[in-house]
Figure 1 (cartoon, helix red, strand yellow):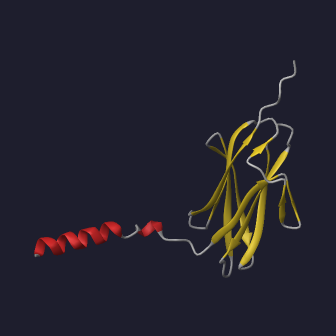
Figure 2 (cartoon, rainbow, N blue to C red; figure 1 turned 180 degrees about the horizontal axis):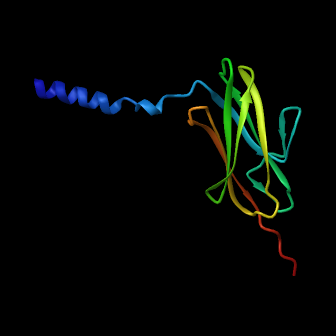
Figure 3 (cartoon, one colour; figure 1 turned 180 degrees about the vertical axis):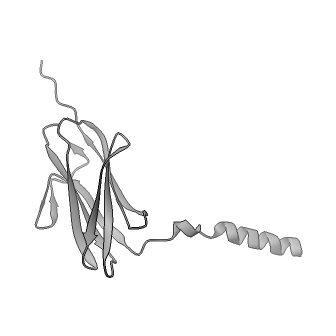
Amino acid sequence: MRKAVRLFWLAAAVALPAAGAEVSPLKAPEVAVCEAVVDRTCRGAAKTFSSDVEWLTFLTRVDGATGDAFVTHVWRFEGNEVRKVNLPVRTSSYRTWSSKRVQGTPGKWSCEVFDPLGRSLGVVDFVVEPPKRTP
């Protein structure tokens, strides 16, 4: 009987999330990379962008903030962090964005948004195409 009780508690302990794995009160139901933000809406959202695009923007809608809050946008190129921006979240449902010059840097990119404790709220992977060769 004691062995069964110990196994029960061991299984329960393994099933519980780790202390650092708490769910964030902030949610990011909308994340997108696009060519421009117009009226707080992404224009030209895609997963692949042509080589002639100069700037891209990462738009995030954040829900669930109370009081002063912020999120962090992290831009990565080929897996390496190239930009990190802390952005305020001023209301319970708030859109915020950051931009990065990508012209001349074809390859695999990603943008990820984090809450103040470093928990990921969403990520967008995308590609900037290399210039087309002319014969």
